[in-house]
Amino acid sequence: MRIGIIGAENSHAAAIAKIINVDKRIKGFSVEYIWGESGSAARTAAKAGQIPQIVQKPREMLGLADAIVVDHRHAKHHLPAAKPFAQQGVPIFVDKPFCYRSEEGEAFIKLCRRAGAPLASFGIVPRQKSFARFQKKLAGMGLVLAASTYGPCDLDNPWGGVFFYGIHQVETVLLAFGYDVREVELSTHAGKNATAQLFYASGLIVSMHLIREGCPGFGVQAVCTQGSVHMPLTLDENPYLSGVKMFTRMFKTGEPPLTDKQLMMPVRVLE
Image 1 (spheres, rainbow, N blue to C red):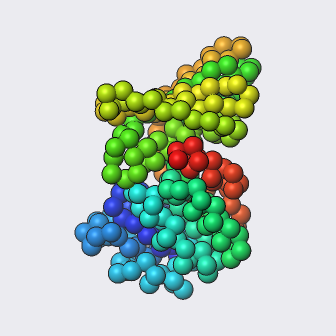
Image 2: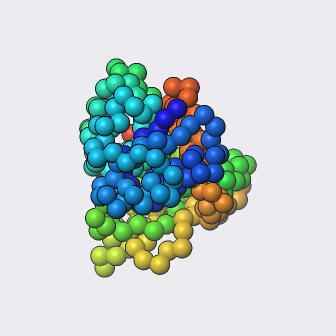
């Protein structure tokens, strides 16, 4: 299957192409096309990932690419770029976060269902082996009484504020503790660090620590009836590989790995 990538200004495009084209880790796929926000971004990603064709407009990939990866830094650009391909039933992976507004995301999901376009969107942090170890330990700890996460996040960054890096903690919380979040409160201090509290229907409160500067990575912890567990979410040797395996499997089978609720709830929490 021939993959086209829309967006080259972050490191993900090159990393995805390198796994497929250079390292040959995913059989039956090649990244053949890329469009970048600038010519230099496209050329840099194409060189690193050995992508043979740079297109001048994303629509040039219509009818050529068998599947599309949408990879902008700012989530507001994701769905407008993906729409022409969704209308033709092309399988689509949207890099995190899925979209910038939930209303837009819900309409796009309906479009994909009508057109038969398989759709997936997720980040890589909770797809690492360290998170799987946390889930395994958590399963033996009884009822979760309180939980928290930490990680880098600048509420004022130009690529959507909390959406840009907050998505990693939100996805981690939802996958670890469930999707039944009823309310969110955000507190900031001195215009820098912030905390977000996610209130669950069960009474559980999960705190997210959004650290503007100096945070070395992500982590998650829980206090339970039978003990507590804390896990720094260290990255795998190739942190993108598990995610690439997930979305190329969907490209091949046509079966999305996430439900509509799993796609939309991270966006609703961030929003």
